[in-house]
Length: 226
Image (cartoon, rainbow, N blue to C red; front, top):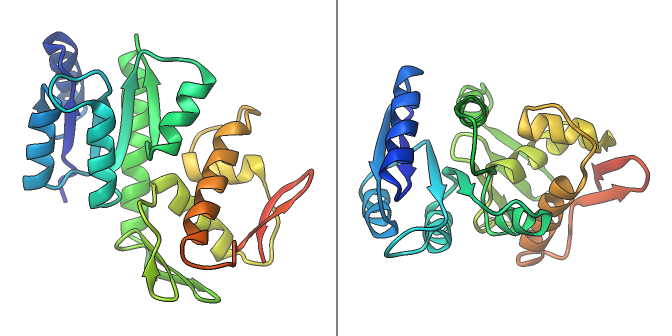
């Protein structure tokens, strides 16, 4: 199955550079040069991943991100000139799966895209697409999480992966580095803020449906289910 990528970037030079680099990697991609154009394409087609610049004419990148999340769990890598920790945390809170700070190296972009696409392919290939724990159900084929039959809103791929790991081994305590390396598929460098934000997001989404947070903090170690 072709994994089509949408590049949303208003600078033609950067957009064309990304398209050329992705096609050299045998990745199928399309281009949008404004938020308005991106929204129209997303309404008409499905994408495995979207590279999204935040500073766009027409509809802003932030609005496009909200629109993407309202429609499902498509992977979104944000391209941003902002590099403060608060800005990065804010992107994750708003539903980005990953971010790349401008100026960027093409090799890094390709590597991060590969990580997101690999997780998509791995999840689709699982023999048993459904995992359950109490009244929590993860459907790995549709990337959906439900509690008591109600779907968690705007679940991201990293949030899904965190829950997937914990539900696979409900009695085990996982360290933060183990969870990070499973969900992001890259080495853990000791920075806990990103993971903690995702855990907090999961708990907030669960609270919209149930009083059970499901995830227990094991101080000094990491997290487990309860």
